[in-house]
Length: 271
View 1 (cartoon, rainbow, N blue to C red):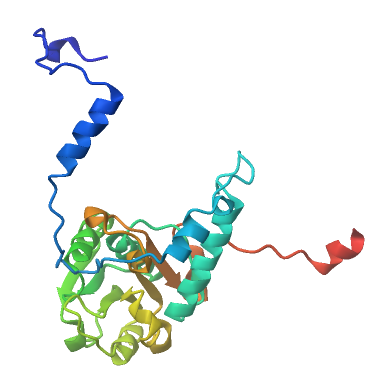
View 2: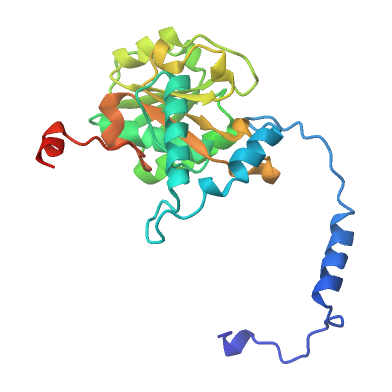
């Protein structure tokens, strides 16, 4: 109920009611005044094109979303298979061992990765974030780390050298960086590991189809935005993120994992 103290006693100044058909026609007229322009925001967001063959045979194919059993949280057997394929693709592109299937957007994924590092590294008190990461990701990281009591140092990570100080949980770098420049982070990865910290890479997923996978140059965790793979811009998102980690970190990974069960041979013999 609306509290008595904030109720208005005056009649609302509303126009005459419309039928459903009239309302839809009016809304189309209003929306028709929108002006579609090209976006140059960049920063990890890119327009996409979905080939009709994919739209018709996957997105419009009820076999991918029809309920398998109504009481199961995964909604559909087809959805489970799609998530499994997604995780497999992420592992292939990042060069890491395990991927999850449940993160909101790139900024959140960066914060989750650094939170993993804080939980993994004993005595962690700070993280270093590249000043060439996407600005929205940096802001999300600052907010999330503040709640954990972790200091965020935004710096030029290519110029950073381990000075023997303690408490570093992770170094986060963008690949390619927010200006589109591609860097070789192999030396930075070694320097990070010498400091006893984890090396986190926020990567452009589509670029990883041609670039060296982060797992090959020393990344412990790779995150990013999967919007590049056909998700419409949607006026800024959020868009589904991804995360892949080394096998040693899989039990600290947030989100959910979709896997394939293996029946032991002994069970098969008993049956």
